[in-house]
Image 1: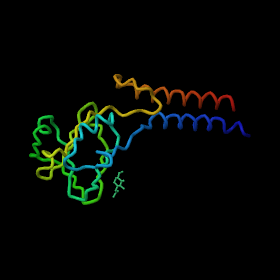
Image 2 (image 1 turned 135 degrees about the vertical axis):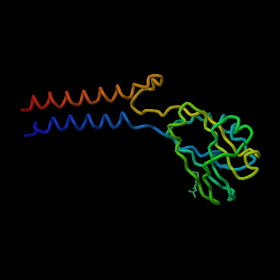
Image 3 (image 1 turned 60 degrees about the horizontal axis):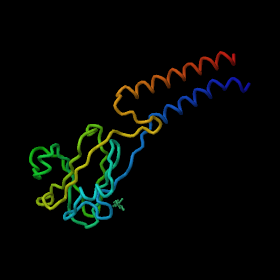
Image 4 (image 1 turned 30 degrees about the horizontal axis):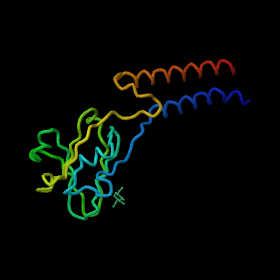
Length: 175
Ligand SMILES: *[C@@H]1O[C@H](CO)[C@@H](O)[C@H](O)[C@H]1NC(C)=O
C-alpha cells in the first residue's frame, strides 16, 4: 500500500535537503560594466563604486566591446601588479576581438587578492588591471559562520545521520 513508499519519501526529502545544503550561490560580474576590459579605465575606482564583493565560484566576464586585442592574466603578487611586472610563466588567456573571456574564481584565491591584468605591451600601465579581495563562497542553506572550516563536514554528518534515522524509523513503522 501507500505506506510502503513513506520511507522512500523520507529518503528523497533528505537527499533534496542535502543537495540544497551543498549548493553555492555565485554571481556573474562583467568587469568594467558596459566599458568592458580595456585601457584608460580605472578598474579599482569602478570596483569600489560597485561595492564589488567577489567570492570563490563567482564568474568574471572580461568583455571586449572596443574590438581590440586584449588578454587576461592573473598575477600572484601586489608588487608585480603595482609595477605591471609581466615576466615569468604567466598563463595568458587571449580575448579575440569582440569576444569574451569568462573565468570562474578558483578556491585557491579564497581570502586572497585577485590581480588581473592585460599582458598586451603597455596595456597594464595604461590602467588595464584590476585587483579585488576574494571572499569565501556563499553556501545557500548554511548561514555563513566562515571561521569554522569543519562546519560543512558537520552539516553533512547531521544530514546523513538524520536521513538514516528517518529511513530506519519510517521503515520500522511501515513494516
Ligand atoms: C560578452 O559579455 C557581454 C556582457 O555580459 C554581453 O553583453 C555580450 O553579448 C558578450 N559577447 C559575447 C560575444 O558573448
